[in-house]
Length: 130
Ligand SMILES: [Zn+2]
Image (cartoon, rainbow, N blue to C red; front, side, top):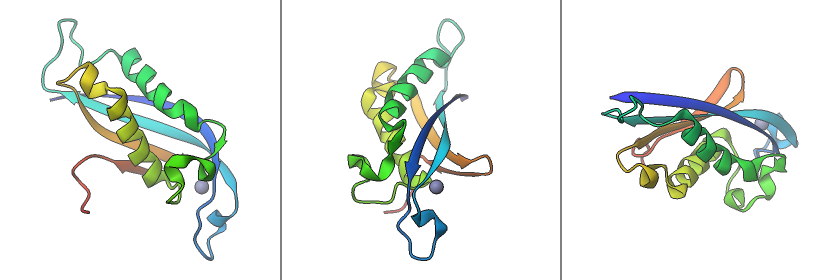
């Protein structure tokens, strides 16, 4: 299996409603997003997917989050906008926007959200228990 990975970033504020946590105060991050896609074969040009296509799709998903207070956005109206929930949101938005529809054999493997240079959370389908 071949895997490709792209990165992009956005800036946004959030607060985590948890008693006693300093994260409950509004603060901002430069969020780094990593998207990993895979395929067991390469196309005629020797690629899983053109990096630019994957970057463009990811930027389209991330753009509505940029320079926002994430707590005020509909996707996070019922949950804290944690790195975990942002990764899940980006994963499903990328699926909806059609990475797997655009190129049906491509699998969206994982979305990772870096909150700081040393802390991240990721989401991938089928690895969570409900
Ligand atoms: Zn934070």
